Image (cartoon, rainbow, N blue to C red):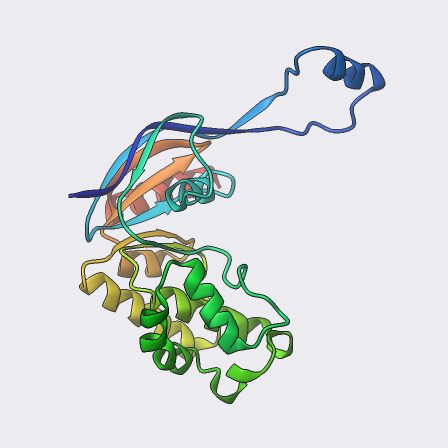
Length: 244
């Protein structure tokens, strides 16, 4: 059963082209605006079945993060359609929903609620969340006393213990020290083995090969290739080597 489907989906944004002249401002006030549009995604179509894992690869500015934002429901396509069926854990900007004046424990409750977890489920998972994060006795201290690494570890722990059906990962598996990175990767593998669906953006080839079955290659917002992770990575690496 498909849990993620993109049907000819496109997403554009207004492009800011620099300082406007006075006549440009007057024209925008007195008449309809004709702003230049930048297409982050163009006519993207793919389907992801339950339990599959997809790597999204491509150069910077290819549209990878925009694709994840559409899956997460943070924005909507201008054209086409995007279907997502299941609870999403978006590991995109870890800690973005945290409040620095609250304690680590209070932020666990707050972030869990934002992810849609019930109070009962959060209570049952609380000790495991704290233990996995490695925060220890600092869990009852204000978040403003935490290092950036501690905040990211706690946010990651809340997200992966929220029983997600779909996980979105954007270059966040480098959080913490080497030991925590391994623990994070092992946790993702555990969730995959439990049948969770994964969409991963990373420039780390070995990590993508470990975690993903399939891949799509984006460039200029368009799908260049859709296939097995090894096939797509080989073609992408070949293109980069030829461009040097």
